Image 1 (spheres, rainbow, N blue to C red):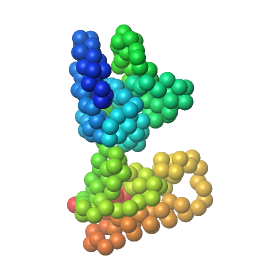
Image 2 (tube, one colour):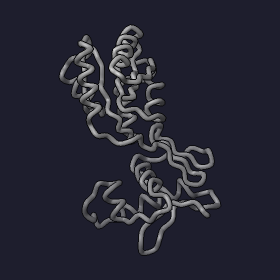
Image 3 (tube, rainbow, N blue to C red):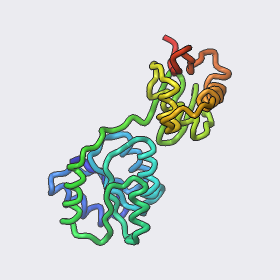
Image 4 (spheres, rainbow, N blue to C red):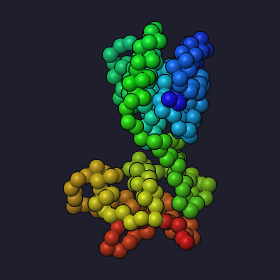
Length: 225
């Protein structure tokens, strides 16, 4: 397996890297949480081994950000924090397993093997672009023509869904189910009002509109041909 090890203690990192490579794995190691986030989001790994306490960005925040960006690579947390609440926090953040230091390498190797057997999705796309409109899932930044656009969380989810389906028509029902998690019609103009505000932020002041209403069908984000 190709493993990313995010561990700031050199002695621990060297020990784990040596043992994992003897097991036949390929290990990439970084000591920084921010570097770990960049590598995990931009490259393909089979497993992430992440220390909870890291410089620049802690392990929980690293994994939460990845999961928010739809990166589903399995994560094994390493930590000295052994309380039940600490383990629960790690799992809620998106971790798949949790190993408390100190540990026997044989146990870590067994957990690595078990996680490697689990089916998981390939590297997820975290950046979307339509014309001069850009959306970054990891940084939660939206820009048009290089200028940042401030969106509310629901507006961000709405734009993300539209950009994931760029060039396609998405219906009101699809938006209710995937943006609001409604599996019924609330009989309100919630979709229309949010789209109106989103249009004001994304298209106002630009000569080219990117958010379109397809009469009788739904909505679409698309750039001109």
